Length: 138
Image (cartoon, rainbow, N blue to C red):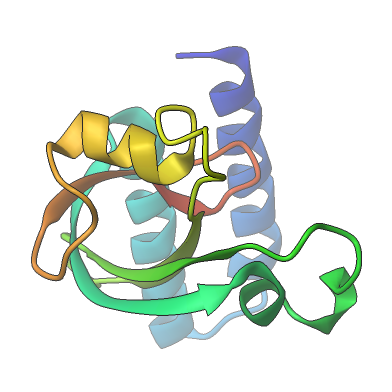
């Protein structure tokens, strides 16, 4: 396990301990389930299923606070349901490549790993990144 994963696990455990003491039994059960789900994703990863795809721009996806910060790019907002007891869902933005950059783009890397472009119903691998967010493995 990498050092960053160990740090993330330690942070989750500390947060868990702080919150657990302030919760009733039902909330504690939910908290334990969520912690176990995160630990599994850190250790092994999950599989997920693409449930929806929408064409959008990075500004629409990331919001007004990023407007003007980056060059506006079109892309896909991909919704993924994680194959887990809770079935958590998350969205991820994949920018369309610039004219000469398909192989280096997220879409190109996705196609290389999964053998096709993102499509509804496709199974994907999911991990928790160093910032604690679910992400499709590309």
